[in-house]
Image 1: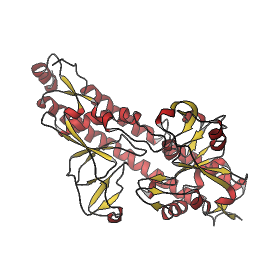
Image 2: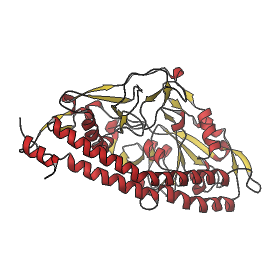
Image 3: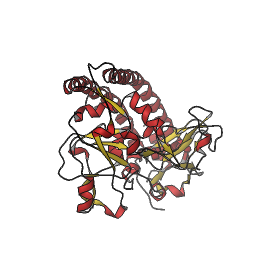
Image 4: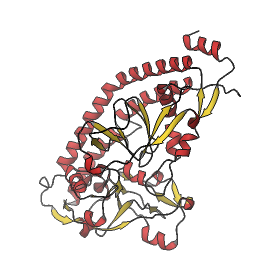
Length: 397
């Protein structure tokens, strides 16, 4: 019998108490910061509604060894352990355990609930996570010595997993860099034989999407969410799982068809705005969210498959970030996108680019093959053992 089994047998043979998270830790929201104080580099990261820092400022409101949960944006529900002092922004929750719970044990438990939290996102456009959802999580509360042993096991396993995946991650990073370099080389306007330089407004019509209250969601017409566009460069029928009730007029104005390109139009940072996804299937009925811009082709000069790549170049990304407006969030308009000048090669040249980049994209991004599958397997192995260690029989108190 190992040490953990001995502790469980000695201290809680009948099981352990479960309690709501808001009884076990303080759950607070971060504080809005002045965007004019934010820098690309600085002393303290700003943690907001994303996986990565929104920027850096020269002050902090939280110490190291702190747990945060993204409150809004594509990553709403993402759980993070901060090892440095930082500024917690208005779009994240901060968790501080009370005496009954070890900080690191709380982290491992909440991280185990990450998928559940992300499934509880709400909102027609940019997703959000309610504080009440976090507060209502029920966590097993074994004695502190048991918590400490579990933390030691999981931290050791985390370290081992990190070492095992480091080489794979380095390889994937190299492949992604290679993919990005090939993408920018292959779509460089100077490489094509005789491209036309055309403003996107001559190629597409632009329209913002549908905004409705949460009571309209869950049934009706297939609905493309903000996260669908943000996370995928191409969309197929099977990718669309959300539903919304809409009127015939809304369906007529906002219908999605093969070849339509969607752009994210607002987020916490300019870096998250202007990411595109192209619909590659014929859709019978489908509409899109209000935080996204639809670009409907007016011509057949661009292959839809080529559109999946030509709006991810460094040149286009630099154009987008330099044309964002800032109030409380970064935002982009269809009018601004329409002014971008795109080099349009021949259809044959477009197809050659697609043939090369499809293979590289699959290797870098497919979770069913290639390097990401190896990294995913390591992650699932850790999650399996973590979840096993956090299963307890509940006793009444």
